[in-house]
Length: 22
Image (tube, rainbow, N blue to C red; front, side, top):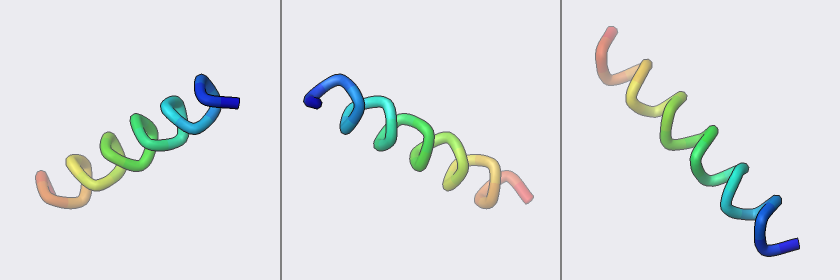
């Protein structure tokens, strides 16, 4: 469960970075 949560956070963080880059 903890791993899934971490993965979700990482994916969200990457998406946020992509949006910021734009």
